[in-house]
Length: 312
Ligand code: AGV
Ligand code: CA
Image 1 (cartoon, protein in one colour):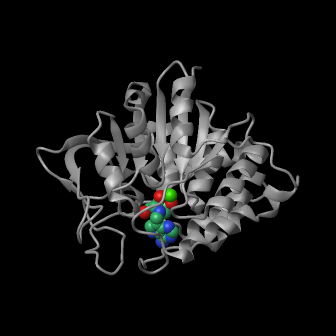
Image 2: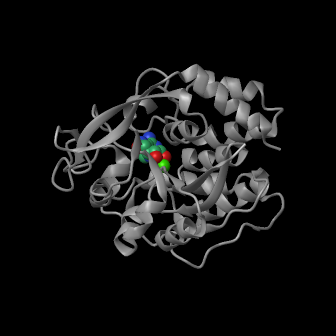
């Protein structure tokens, strides 16, 4: 079986780190590089946790790079703190060392290097803001030809998830953190699969999902899932600003198993500034994206848990 080459840029949230764990279990995927941007997490623990997950759950080595990008609209610290929690999990610290190599390049240059080092085209998987991709395109526009497509957790055409002063609530956070970067990527010719809140809203963390993982915690990988999500607020009665969804994990699953999601083409633009900054808006003259708008939650959680069972 030929494996899809994937470069993964994430921002250190719990579901970002679980996504890395999942990618390492996919038999049809080969990770060509990983980079970490300090948006919904802190740089050091998110980078260390990434290296430890590769060491503990990967069957091959992957180089990790740190981003030096900074966003316009910072994430709440209460969310970013989760990166320390995953980094401290005992299962990731048993060996007491970190073997996965750390690149000396900043993430956007690491991305360029990894694209150029592989002969075929690479799928880009981004589960945080697009800052490093926008910078890479500005620095080396020729990389566009080496990109098969971008699969991005970002955006919505319905209700946003940003609740911040001076914003109207229409944006999704990964766009809002750096709206100009998304705007820049929209100007490129790269094919974009947009895994938006329309589909991720279908996969909240719930007490039932936790119970499923708890019941199968005899598998080390499933126990790892339960531990990672232990600090995240589930959906019980109604949504709050901190309710956790499996945003990035659904995005990652759509790379390993595309039949889990439904897509349709939408023409749209990104609003780069002002009170709606970071909003994705449908517009006939806008560029096309493949909007991932639906999924079957049972099939998704089944796929996720089965992959975790394979981890050793
Ligand atoms: O908007 C979803 C993105 C995803 O990439 N992140 C979390 C996922 O990693 C930001 C976010 C929105 N609401 C959150 C977020 C919450 N309640 N807790 C943590 N992060
Ligand atoms: Ca994320």
